[in-house]
Each structure stands twice: as C-alpha cells, then as structure tokens.
Image 1 (tube, rainbow over the protein chains, first blue to last red):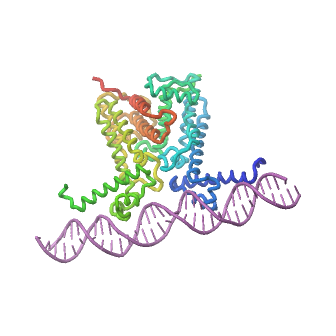
Image 2 (spheres, rainbow over the protein chains, first blue to last red; image 1 turned 180 degrees about the vertical axis):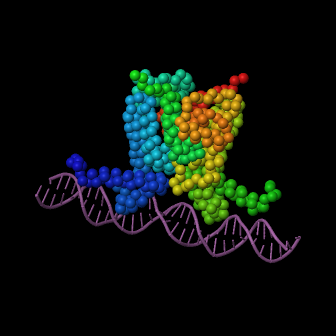
Image 3 (cartoon, each protein chain N blue to C red; image 1 turned 30 degrees about the horizontal axis):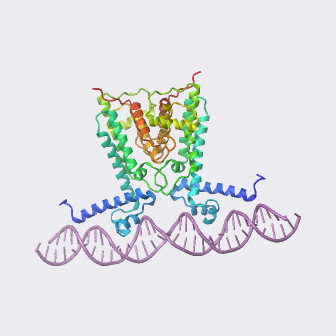
Length: 232
Length: 232
DNA sequence: TGTACATCAGTGAACGCGCGTTCACTGATGTAC
DNA sequence: TGTACATCAGTGAACGCGCGTTCACTGATGTAC
C-alpha cells in the first residue's frame, strides 16, 4: 500500500487499469469497431457516463490501448533479444518474441499494424512506444558491429536514401553504415509483413502453417543483414 | 447496345456498377466502417431498401468490392510486368504497379491487406482474385528460369517447408526449385509489407518519403531472388 | 399486332437496435483550520 | 480530534443520431399466345 497515495488516487489508478483491461478483453473478442464505451461500462457494472471520469472520450481510451500495445510488443522484442549473446540468436529471439505476442494478441496487433481506424488520428504520444521494436533491432546491429560480427554490404545508396539513413543514425545515436541501416529497414518491414500475412490468412494455400517458413525467413534476413554467429 | 439483353437486364447491370462505384467513392472518402447502404442509396437518389434488389446484404456488397480490389491490384501487377522483357525490369514493373495502385486506392488496399473487418468473413470467391499478384511474380520467375537468368540459391529447406513449396509449385503448374519458391514468398511478403508500412505511416521518421527506399528494396529483392538482367 | 398475365424494380413506412456524449444530481472522500 | 467546506466519483435520464433489414405496395417492363 502506497502511503503517499490517497484512497481516491489508488481507486482511480486501479479503475483506470480495469477499464483498459475490460476494453482489451472486448477488443480481443469483438474487434476494434465493436468496442464501445457502453459495453465496457456495462461489463464493469458502471453507468456509461462514469467512464468519462477516466477517459474524456472513446478516442482517448483507444489511444491508451494503442500505447499499451506498442509497449507490449516492444517489450516482447526486448525480452526475446535479451535471451542470447550471439547476434544471430538475439535477432531470432526478437523476431520470435514479436510473432508470439502478435499471435496471442491478434486484435491488439491489428490495432497498431492493421489498417488505421477511419476517423481516428494517432497522437504524438504513440511515436515513442512505436519505435521500440525498431530500436531492439538497431541495438542488435550496433552490438554486432562492435563485436565485429557484422559484415557491411557494399551496394551504394542513392543520395536521398543515404540522407535518410544518416538521419536515422543520428536520431538513434548509432553510427552504422548507411547500407546496413537501409537493409535494417527492409528486414524490419519483412518481419511485420510476415506476421500480418500470417495473421490475415494470406499464407493459406502456400506456407501456412508458417512456423518453418518464419524460421527460414529469419535466417535469410540475418544473412541479408550480414549478421554472423560470434566466433570464439 | 447488346441486343441479347433486355432493357431490364441492361439497367440492372448498369445500376449494379453504379452502386459499387458509389460505395467505392464513400469507402475512399470515409473508410470501410463508415460505409453504409443507406449512404450509398441516398447518394444515388434511391431509397435504401431498393439496394436489396442488387445486394442481399451489406456483406455481399463488401465482398464485391473486395473481389474488384483484388482484381484491380492484380491487373496493376500484370500491366506493370508486361512493360518489359528483362526479368529484373518485369519484376520492378510489377512492384511499381502494385505500389502505384495502392497509393491511389488507399482504402481499397486497406480493405484487402489491412486488418480484417470484424464480423466479416471472406467467402471463397475471393481466393482466385487474391492470388493474381503472386501469380505475376511466379510468372516472372518461371520465365527467368526458362531464359537461364535465374540463379537458384543453394540453402536447403527444412522438410516441412520444402513440402509446402512443392505443393505451391504443383498448384501453379511450375517447376521452380523449392528454395526459389520459398524466397519468392519472402519477397512477395516484403512487397506488401513495404506498401502497408508506407501507407500507414510507419516510415515517418525513417525512410519517408519512400520512393527511393522502395527502388532500393526492389533491387535488393531481385538480387535475393537470383534474378539477373537478360544477357545478349 | 394486341391482349392477359407474370416478373421485377423501386417506394415509403416501420422495427428495433446501440451508440457517444451531456448534464444536473447525490453522496462519499479529502483538506484546512 | 472535530468541524466546515471543497473536491470528485458515480448515477440516471435524456438527446440525437444513423444504421441494417423487412414488408406490403405500386407501377413499369417483359413474355406467351
């Protein structure tokens, strides 16, 4: 029990949590469009207008769910990467972590990586959490470069693209070669492309179930990035 | 004027077209969730119940739009690939065709490659049209293999994945090496992953605008597939 | 070519639904002296 | 420690909205003889 919080404050924190939890439950069961404040209130045994003490509008509740989802998937990537020393294994762990989270949280994944909900505009608060998975990947590459297990590819970039990768490098404070960063964007895209295709059933008729394909693609991506296992 | 059609039949065909057209307009303007039969009828100067002569339910109208969208993006890929002889240029043309279509038809793209609309289940009629873009890619690879401009990669596949690629090969009647097919699924995924990321703003802060990145990635994917320009 | 009947497109009213949000209110919790 | 006032959580009724779908109907188009 936190003595610096009043009972009111504690109750408020707790109820805010419960509202998001119930909203997440309904999101998982029914999808984003069927999620309604009235439904959440009903399930919590409250009157719908009471929710407005906690979230000023439905969009604000959605924003909170989106931020939570970005943080959850980012954390899954971080934990996955943290399980190993070897750069290839860290990369693999991050990918598997993201995929496992996505499969377990279909609708939350759709909320952040599916098509945007019309009428809803993501506010700035989401951009930080949204970057977490990318940062994990960048971290693996930076560490691999430092350990000498990253083979930089040699294909030259166009000036515009090189400018963009240099801005990225500056933003994250890592000095990786431009070509590596451009390739990193490709594999980052590939990761979410595969998960989206798997979850929306686009692989039915080809590589569904996608477990082995996913493993294979992870290996190909690591090679494409120039990652190699630590030599000892 | 088609003499084998009665005026009634012609009117029916025409109005069916107009309904879909207006629905597409509202989809583009408002998004899938805001699309309503009443709105479409209103705009066409009809009473909402009249639409039921043409589509038994809203889901049927959505299905028609989805099929049209798959066909349109498939056609864009086909036309893009048809513009060249060289396999790398055909591949590039197909990718650019798909991207251009997607950028010009944001909501229709979202309808087929965004997150699924909850409560809507895609019927079988969509699977044929949905395969068209993939078939274009396979066609490019088949022709390249026949012309000897496809370098087969040598990494071996796991048994399960090899089985899946062999079923794919059988389904499309092409005998490409398993490894090429597995890589084809990767780049096919990459193509739509990039387009989705571009359209949903995930590249803001990295490679946005994405034109040059897209060009670069297309080249990397062609190399990954083992495609090389025709030698003469 | 003309008539009798069948088909079908479109009308207009209605049903029943659930939604987001506002507002004046009651009563419990917290704060200052 | 006790009292007076301020803050805030939750209530309940209401507003206004638009939706998908059904149904009995009118009148125009098509068909068979």
